[in-house]
Image (cartoon, rainbow over all chains, first blue to last red):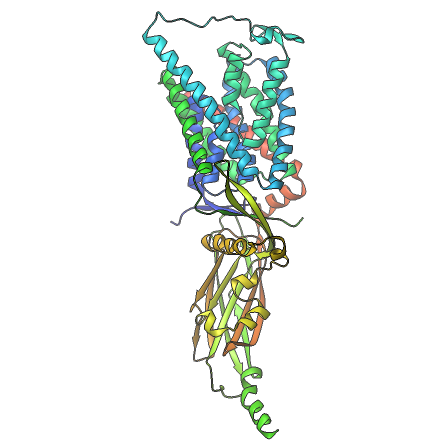
Length: 309
Length: 251
């Protein structure tokens, strides 16, 4: 039998079906295992197989919606979603996403959208990867030497001093809404320009900036990511016509199956080991993209077909 | 005067009395989800109302070209240690696909002047009016366009790919790749002798998305909001179905 190709209607490229299902599956497996959306992996992988960057970003956002819905359902059953916090983050997120879509369109017109995407990836993945690696190595160290100093569980952070305080019962917090709105806005902005849900930024920010308890962090993050990436998908579809439904569907099918298998596999590994592996994965992606920017490319020219309206 | 008349009588048949008739194996290509490219057979014959003239041999050139579109060509340069887009030149019209098949090396069977008039070779098929004025190294941008499109299989020249039998019947295959843009594809057939075009014929292949592909493209373009919301709905349902399905499996 000939290789199973599928012609993607919006991207206008023909790609092997099994490559897309496999890509979705691998990323889904990793996202299920580590509890992240996987957008930061799927979007660069789509670049590598020749999907135009704008379509990869918009379709990546659509794929994250599916994996986040799948993930949030499990957290809803365990009642580990702080809806009030989710909505506050969302308010900031929608503003950030709108801004991000505008910046994306501006850079697209100036021919610098690839640079914008690549720099965002290197910067944010590099930063988060290093922080995560450092933190999990320290945790591993502490476990082997029990006498070491522990971080206090309840500290008075910046969030307690700012005005506009609000009670978040599920998280057991009484804090200002300004920091969550800002965190939401940053994540929404990144979702729009990187095609990611932003869980890799949201989760550490919720723990270290907002001081939320770890058990509600993942569920709440996933809850608001559904809306942010959903909003981003619709915005990209209406402003740049760059969502490819057929591509998204194949990635989603591979992704949701992979995620369920990954979640089972994740239960067999220790939390610290899991975090070190995720940190290394994040750093590897950042390093690959950084090298693309630093090394002289084989082809110095690139083409952008300009459609007639 | 008589000498001139005799000369005209001698060369006239070569220019006026050979005409081309041709057909295509298909004039309609449907892009469906399973589209893997398409092979088009172009065949034809040379019609004469006099014996074949002496002199340079008859040659055939066949071109197939996709819809022309403006293309932005960008060049990268090193800035602050990073490779970023620095230069840009807009090419007015470049065909999305261009294939040439000939009976012999193009340089031997077509003169520069004739190429310029009929826009046959790949560089001539790209229209870059006014490009030279706005950028000094514009030729390198046009070359890059041709190089990149040739590497991806969108542009190509196959010299000797047209088979001509008994200076009358000819045929050639043109492979349309899987990554095809929709639109009207123009097929041109040229007969040349001594580098001069003596007759030509033009035909069209209609390349259209069909079925689901057609429907999705139209929806995405004409009702982007509905399309976006539908994409969203599919994602939500797929996410829910996976979660529900695996819970059933485990139970």
